[in-house]
Image (tube, rainbow, N blue to C red; front, side, top):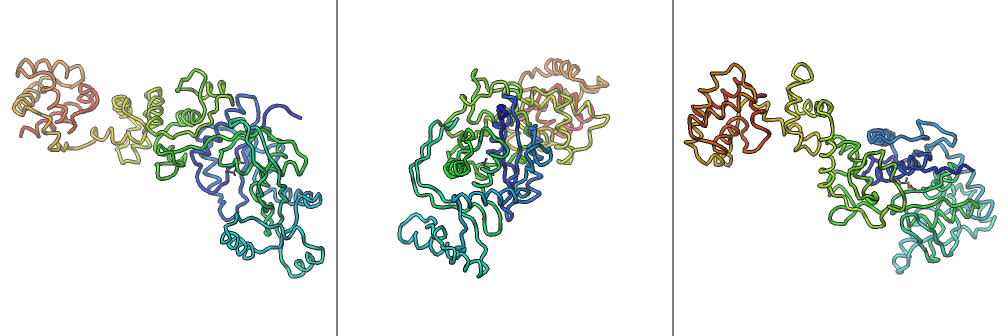
Length: 481
Ligand code: GLU
């Protein structure tokens, strides 16, 4: 058998790619790329009511956006396909027959209504409801009668009651006491396989060596291990990674903000930053460094560095990290990446001859950017036709008479220059100080407020240069008139 690792990411296409699932995909991918193994994408779409083609397409798109590539999958092909469970029904049925023949599974004719009634009775009696195994004991005659009556059976796995232990790569030894879990359905009466069964059949046939998934699946593992045993198949290595929690230590949900990859993509997070951030949820590098490129993540990945503790999703840290990646971009690259957000916010088109000015603007505000969609609010003041000065900001101009002096002097000086560049503005400031005796903050602040309506903002000489002479004059004049 091939000894290089084969791992899979197996999403159910019932919605967008969740951040937690993306982390699972990333860790699988990192391990595959680190070890020269194979990364497989398998679509678990047997829940026909909840699975949609749109979800599948959006999961593909989000994985591609993250820059994850898979070696085998529905679109990529491979020697172990098909890679969509809905296209593997014959395989599940055939293996179901095998389990029935070996006595590890049996037909069950109980109807949903019967099962529900028994479940309720068990709950009423204070018992944990599970299947009582009655169809296992059906005589051939009784079975024939059910068939005669046209009842379509499901297939149940005969779950042995025994100690089950396995060594988890993230959690160490996990032991399950011989608890009655009940015989569970592996094939529904409509022919659809259930998750635990289909996953095992596929993981075996696809020669998966390591099952890396969220630890919400730990509870499923004993059932899956029993299915492997029933078939006489070797177990893969299991690795259950801790769930991602919100800052309140509750399971990450909508309540905590955006939870799907596409929401982060559309807000303007960078795929490299998200890969970096999600990799560090439950995993750490030997050096303790936080900013790690894909290459370094691949190089350094190891199961030993996986943490056993729940990972907290800290959006403040994500924003910081994304900001670092934004600042590492070339300015022209960053400007191009900002264009769609500006377009969407209704800014004038600056992809043409004004591109250089736009680049200057972006360069001025890039340090404060946490994600790209913020660019619109950061650049808004450059495009405003007039400035609205709130009372709070007006109060920031402590000395109004000094401000007036500054404005008049500024207007007078302005006429002496053809073009107002950052350099000219610095000259001008000196002259204004000479003329008025006002200096420092008392000089800069009124000008900043007149031009931007804000008390804080990017480098004023550069702002002035971008505004240009006429616009500066207009905005200042308005205040003294
Ligand atoms: N379809 C399952 C899920 O999305 C896969 C779990 C597994 O990796 O076994 O949770």
